[in-house]
Image (cartoon, rainbow, N blue to C red; front, side, top):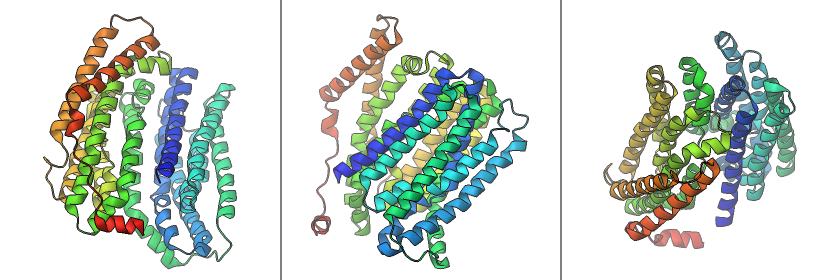
Length: 484
């Protein structure tokens, strides 16, 4: 089980790194105006893929696990047809943006049809990694995610390296989607047995109803990922390229939180289903407390290293992105657990999409006001504030599910001490690095090495690890069920 979870995690990491490499390479290759246009195009692409999915791929494991294998091809066809419809809706929305963006300083109108075609071809394939997981091909699922990311990297950056410009990148994205669609078709035929293909309306209705709450959450999250760039493009267009750099997410913390949640998922579900609320709360506290020590260190470490890190990654372009990047990095401070996984285990899926729409609404309202007042730094601050507002709401739902309060739902005192320790280590490392060499790479190494050493020594010296809540023993009913 651990090996399988590790494989999935590695596949996700490679996928995230592939997306980061696209940004790194394009910033170095393109002129600022070209990079700003590509960043805006990619933000629309990311949101459109989320709109096109609408939670349908995420529900595949649930349905395929219940159906006889002889019906898998029929259900897969049903899912592909639904995704084709939602993909066509997303593509139509993209085409509808043409008249709206005609007066934009970014040359998008001629690119939107190609972007719509890429989305139309890609959305029906979104269930591929879930299909592989359902068929117990865990390594295949990880390879699909990693391979798709690397292929997208090659198809988007390759044409630009060959001098084909932004249009070439869009042609490459269409090529990537077409290859992905062809590979998905071959994969589907190989993994699913022959059988009846006509899906019954009752099955379609059940899948749509089941996927709707998750789809609403994913829709809001996908739009929220890109809305900051859209607001900056509208109210501070001269800094869109810099903000796209600043909004680059550090992928390791969310992946670690999700992986930790996956390890405890079956135990949390068992605890809630059998009314073992104290057991569920103990699992939650033990996991969240351990992630706190990681999150505090990683977050403050990236805030410390931001000037040198952005210089090394992006070749010294956009030094004005450092402060917004540091502000956006602070958003990681709430990534101490798989909050959605805990609420799903408790059966409270409604709060998940409520929280997603809350952060989207707050981000939009605060972002417009803050960007008009303070430019891209204001947008970064608004995104941080919106994330904290939604986090407080989500924690209140988890507190209700686990029989606690907002004050007791996580060990706030431990988290505060970890943050103070990380901040002290960061300040000390920054002060020492002032006397180091001018090379950004060497200075980054000095800062990173000192910070890690001081933070780990502080955790040990101040005994923070001894304050972690104990990991509870599994309940007897869970152990007997797992053994069976």
